[in-house]
Image (tube, rainbow, N blue to C red; front, side, top):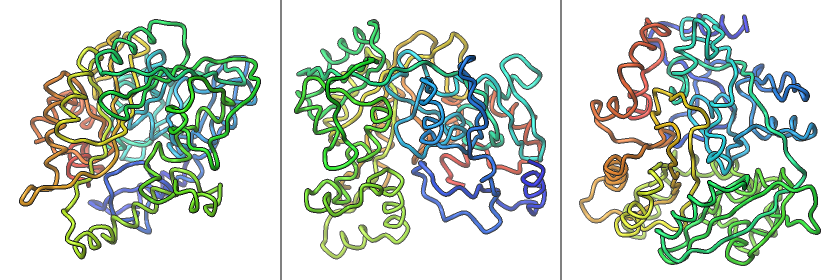
Length: 438
């Protein structure tokens, strides 16, 4: 910790502070970290698992893949395991995370008991819900590394069973699907998420822990999980394979890279069928504008990246999907219900406690009409989500004006936190980072 603090304090005044992380799940693409980026490798690892107390002490840069590998042998897992293997615990807390247990367990930061946070001025503070740094504890979620970096976290864990039994339930319209979500979230099921293939074909996948399974499926090689949703009514997975069911094909986005073509699939090494490999390919393409140049040569229309996760109240889901079909047209999309686990809110991402929202995830590109500026579709989505009383995650491009942004993400509370924990402005503020891409 002393070495990292010294690195931070040695950064020249006014120079950008970046972390030297080998992976990222952000889609605000920037240049690679500079050579003087902070080396946080020492904070990647599980420090301790207390099997009796159902807690773990974890380095902030630990990936969920490694965290799950450390806890599952004890019959335990985090309450929410975000769907991609290389998401880090610190990243999920500072940038939010979600998965199919979120209707019951909220978001990853709601399972945090305490954090050690490196502030921009080099102090390391221990923040918990009831100590002198409780303001930072509650304000850290959705701060995206603009208030400091979580070096160690103690988190609460839940018990697991060896398998997850799945049931795929089809709905023919969005209103019925939204009603199905409410009913499922009021039941004793352990996991709920959904996949929308078209306006009249959508599925909820309901998961339940179980001790036994006559046979289990394997979606880590030739078989593709999202295809099975349409092909099977029931299924069983080992609990680890359930956690990473979406990672093998980055949901369905590996199709754009050819990884789902049967011939390519047979030749693609299994160890490289994973989201971080695909993201590196996409980052290389974006950095060198390879696809854009090819589209220009072929006289194809320019395309806008529409990579977002938004949440709307469950009673407004059908309205959002109708709008999305008419104006954007991306398919499939992911549905994931979420409700805060506790009764205390989190100021930088305000959600009403007890209210059920549905996350809608969509990740593709959309053609632009002649003269239509880049960002048009994303701006349209932002306006609609706001109209429906929803929220938008900030891991990708955002287009809010500064006044709009701070109205949605509690600028008053954020400015107080910034003044207390980054009084010299060594890190960019949340708007500059998430909209200005600093």
